[in-house]
Image 1: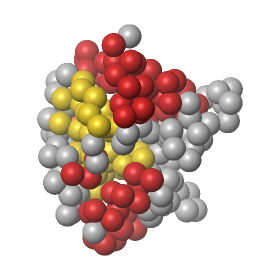
Image 2: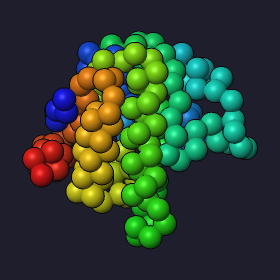
Image 3: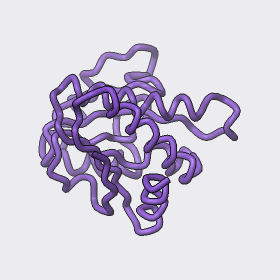
Amino acid sequence: MIDVVQADITTLDVDAVVNAANQRMLGGGGVDGAIHRAAGPELLAACRAVPEVAPGVRCPTGEARVTPGFRLPAEFVIHTVGPVWRGGGEGEDDLLASAYRASLAAAQAKGAQTVAFPAISTGVYGFPPQRAARIAVETVRQWQAGHDLPARVLLVAFDAASARTLRAALAA
């Protein structure tokens, strides 16, 4: 089941929330900063404990890492890094789909029944929102066709326009 909700992702009572992180996993702006603020300083400490796979890189683009949720209602935070939009000719669609798949696999590995996703890469990373919404919906549908968990996926919009974009993709 996939639902679209307009909400503050940090307040949702789900098993896991997905954080649109950067490769350093040390917080940032947008949803990343909001999740770090709501989860408390323990989240930053947990992120720092994630080993670097390259200098300054804890989570490469298209992959996911899991930490506890600390002060969030969610038990887990799944940190994923979406691609920076560079015009669409540098594998951005595949990298975005990979970020969703990796997050869903991480949720499944933790036994999460419910997971909430923000619109990955559509903020400062510049991914076109309609294209990102289509990729999100297609990727989640494909995942759910072959897996039992997570049983419910929330696509979370921070405003009415984003909610409309996600709902249009879900209806297509």
